[in-house]
Length: 92
Ligand SMILES: [Zn+2]
Figure 1: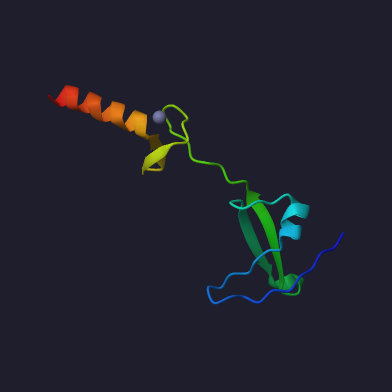
Figure 2 (figure 1 turned 60 degrees about the vertical axis):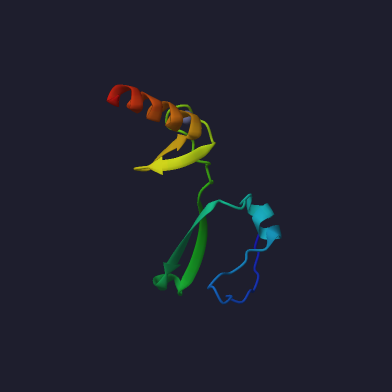
């Protein structure tokens, strides 16, 4: 199967992918794509699905209600509050 489309690069250097193409490939909004340029293959540009988007989860309880990320670890509001309360008890 082949699929081709033409689209101008917009003022923000974006190219929109047709929703028919996304549906055909099983790609969704939020997925991460990788673009590869190959000069030896006739300056071919290929676009690959790199990873499905995964919502960040709290490192402690796996909640998706994230309020802060510290050193690439996401923390939910309940765990942040609990940690702050423990810190206040141990400091006071
Ligand atoms: Zn949590």
